[in-house]
Length: 84
Image (cartoon, rainbow, N blue to C red):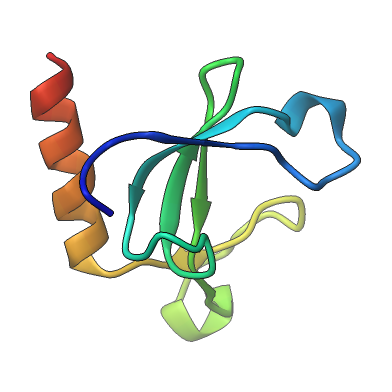
């Protein structure tokens, strides 16, 4: 990504997940680790699923643990600096 935010429409049938905005991504296609902002200001993170037990964590059943590369966090920090 070139650092610009990109708006996406969610293909989910969840009405609260339409109009997602890419905040940081490692590719332009959306098929890689990505951080999204929802219309209501929440964040969604796309990454590789991790079994919480293998990480030594007890994660509630309605939550998920995902792995994202440090380079995505760097993009997220840079986006935060540019925003304010």
